[in-house]
Length: 528
Image 1 (cartoon, rainbow, N blue to C red):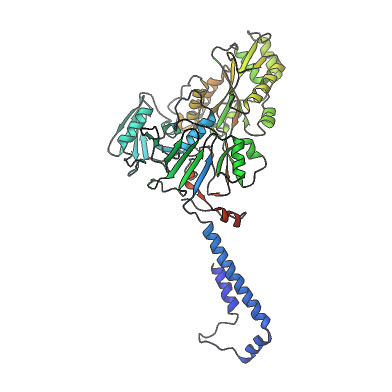
Image 2: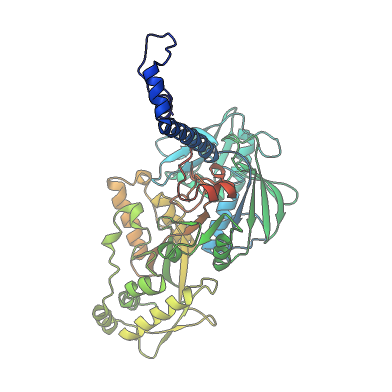
């Protein structure tokens, strides 16, 4: 602005600076002006142009400054009957998990959060400590926090919620803190408490969640629509938007079309879409790999010989599946945990080796010929059938008969599991729970996952993979997209839309007129 002002003064005062008195122009100067009216015209045009540019710059700055107001429109695939995230859903898909986690994180808070590096960050708890055995933890709570119904988020209220979620814990409240005790060591308690299933929510008589988060429930139509209103007394500050409207039961295709037609603001997307051509006005974003696609052998599977299972693992050619069926999304994997969590996934080879597979079959005690193994999949997964059929083709090439079927008893199941935490110990425990595998034993030194602890984590994962009860195939990301109307937001790298500074509560909306005027030149705005 100073630079523009100096140029403005230079334009209207081309003469040199005098003694301070008002100097009259000499006749020669006046004559030159009279003889050159074009000079005055040029100066006048320059002044007008500078004034116009200053006004436009001021308007543009005001138009792109964060401001309050507006309704954020969101579309999701799932169609839940209740606003809840159960600890062990019987028939839930990863999509159900992500949708519930993203929705409930707008309503409630956890005691702590984890960033993408797995570092704990304060939420309702501002400080914590534990004894050397990690059996006793104490948390200092944030003062002055209220639930949406006006009641205080006191240590007693929070202890009651946590105690109901974890009957095996001894949760006690004091004046400004609460303690958690357990007979077993809890070295990864902070990562556990940061999971969406540990959101601190009360329920009213209609089973509507009441939390302390940035938004409160204004209207709920099960399976169809959720309207949220901004929490004016949010401890983290009032959200920029006045409301959030979430439409449920929308396919990925319907969501993409609605975004292109400017009928929604934030959608889910197929990971392949983020790698392909972008739709008009869309801003797609990929998370880190936070899902595992794997084959799991049932307890009563006919394929009981570990060498036969290993032969199947070696027969699968993951590269064509990734490039053709997944369209480049995801990473071929032979480990449960992705490399960004552990750094050692390359130790587990995902390379196909048909020759080695045939050798193992020849040495197997269980004949592969004349035996058919049933491979099932989740019909709600749009890619699962094609991937299962490709796996069956690879198996037949080495002499294993795999029949893709959704009826009758299954020997093998193609499954997706969510890796919900950047903490590898927590994600490993959650993955094996979803896959129905036995929980590994973790030493108490594991939460740092450094030094010897990383070796122990590797050994825990190795013990799960020995015997080939599970065959990891791919680590997959999740994708989202936002319209140009959405400012100062992109999905966090963990896919939950709730990381500090990247929550839906931190974004603001530009009006459509401003979008058209400033298309292609939008400066970044600061956080709330």
